[in-house]
Every structure is written in structure tokens, then in C-alpha cells.
Image (cartoon, rainbow, N blue to C red; front, side, top):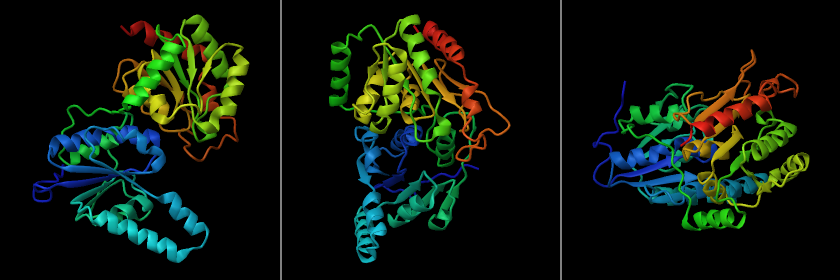
Length: 358
């Protein structure tokens, strides 16, 4: 049954808060909701609460009016320092600032206890939770299950939009690098002689069970650079520099290693200009699909979206009886689901995508 927000809840001065604190990939997946709310409520003031480290993803979104940075790290330091009074005062101050914004509706896109609590802090009359769990449903006036087609990219957010009566005919992920990010990418492409095209590899993510193997990345990089004729960029965060250096050393080739040397939106701008993106289940990899670039994603421990919504994007996935194990692998570090994805398979799939791209 579809449940519409309705003008009885949102009047002429609509104020809407979306709560999705992180992570990068989840923000990319949920980004179509901003435009959907804007189309349904063109006069609304739309805000998004997010962690500071993910805020740049939304900073230049044309349909967002405001970013609210969650000071979670500050609260964590006060908690660890057992500074209870200061912590309570910080939370009360944050609540006062939220409630001063007069939100009519707040939507918890994360469904966790902490995001539900933050949604409640907003003081919004209508508080809607997507897949509320961990007790967060107690903070909601309404909860909507995580529905949709499980194998379709971002389907739970589309399902939410449908249940709220929002338009979904053009429900597409969107990332908006700023002018400085676009200039950075253009200058680097020119300076590195990459004007004829390049591939981006995104090998890194937060959990080892989602990783492919470094020696395979090295072999693949050689296949792409020498066999497919595309120079290779490595992208990742500062914590990935050592792994990137090992991959580069194993190739013996002149890879462009930008791991930890770009901001998040600078990396996005480089992905936007690329001819091929290959990654694991990681935020940078999902950006390739958001930008409509030819993309290959390698999935193992996580439940994949096999329907990418694009003809030039494909997920490689070989499920085992234990799949998806998510955060509880039982293979004792063998990660056979990822090991089943071979370099030859990835190379063939990449060639097919490139040949099918105008």
C-alpha cells in the first residue's frame, strides 16, 4: 500500500530533513531521493544530516538547501573521556539547533538506533524510518520496510520513494563535483597525457572479505594498460597507500597511483571522465555507475545488486553456499567467493563493455 506524505503534513512552508550519516556508497545509492523530494515539493527547504567525512558528496547538490554535520566524533571523544555533563550539554545544544530549523518531516534512511535518535532530536512532527531496527522504530511515527527488488541497485530507496508518493520515473543516482574538482581533474588529465582515455581501478574498501587479491589487481592492471591500451589510475584513501604501492610494485608498470592524494570529489571528477571503472563493493566503484561510465564491480561477501540499471555496467559474482556472509565470514580468510573471480573473466568483461561503448 502506498502512503503519501500529503499536503496535510507538508504545507506551504515545507521543511524536510534526510538522515543518512554515511557511508560513501550508501549516500550515492540514496542520492536520488533529494531530486524526488524536490520534484514533489518544489518550494521545500531540504536538508541532509551527514558525517563530516562524507559531506562533500552532497555539498554541491543543486536540490539541497542545507547540510547538517553530525558531530559524532566529538560526542565519541566526550563519551570515551567520561565527560558526561559535557556530552549531555553537546547533545542538548545540537537538539536546540535542529529544532530551531522547524522541520516538518524527518526521514531516517539508515534505520539504526543512532540515526533514529538523531531523527527524533530534530523535533519533526512526522518521523519516517526506512527499515528501522535496533529499537530505532520507537523514535519514529511511521516505519517503512526495506522493500523493492533486492537485486536492483538502490531499490530500497526507490521503494521508499514510491511509498511516500514521490516521483520515480527518473530515479537516478547523482554526484556533483564542484568547479574546483572538475578543474583538478582536467589539469591532471592534461598534465598526465590522459586525454585519449584511461581506466580507474578502485581495489580498496573497509572489510578484507570484500577485497580482491593484490596480485590479481597487479595482473589486471597490466592487461588493461598493455592489452586494452588504457593507462591505469589507482584511486583510494590515505589508509590504502601501502596496498596501492604493493600493487604498483608487482606490475612493474608506470601506473598513476593517486591513492590518498585526492579529495573525495576530486576522485569523483576523475571517475566521471574515465573510460572504464573496475572496483569492489566500495563507494568509488559505485560512482562509476552513478556517472554512467562503463563499470565492473566485483562482489563476494556482500549481497550484490545484479541489476545495475545500465547496459554498460556489470557485477561479477559467484555465490557459494555461505554467500552472502556480510560481516561474518566462515571461510577463515580464504575468501573463495572473491577467489572464484579470475583475471581472465574480468579482462573479458572489460573488453566487452569497452567494445559496446560508443
